[in-house]
Length: 50
Image 1 (cartoon, rainbow, N blue to C red):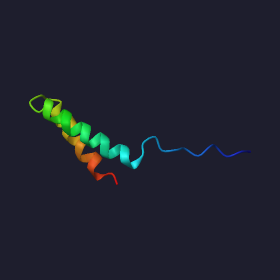
Image 2: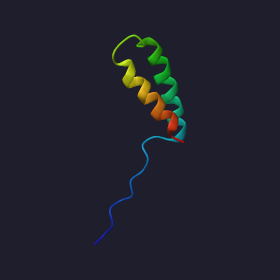
Image 3: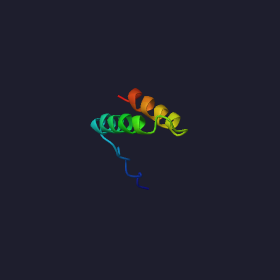
Image 4: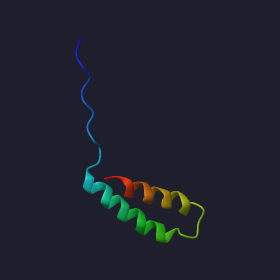
């Protein structure tokens, strides 16, 4: 029986920094909308990754 292939990361460490920057920019654009809370939470979760 063979072992399943090892999963590989989809994003690199640098990608998370780029995503955090993009979310911060978008967060400014949607700051007065109900969805801004979700993007603020995402921004903080991205900051915890490292």
